[in-house]
Image (tube, rainbow, N blue to C red; front, side, top):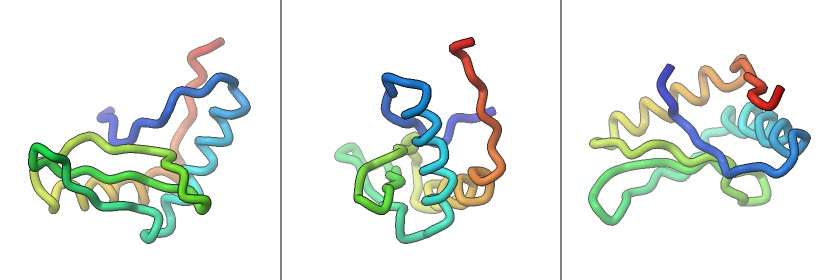
Length: 88
């Protein structure tokens, strides 16, 4: 599938799983999405936790409509998203 949201790198599996849970929870609150425009005129969004920490950054979009579709996709799909452990 397409990568919509990328996180920071985590140093432990526990921290990573906490990050996953944070995305699942915070993606359900539209106020947690910062809709932004880059210096080169592309559009993107950040997903923030309740403490203001950025927990995910989107790809770059050509239009605000496609960015908003990305936000809607994260909000819809994040709660039931699968976790693939690639450390095993």
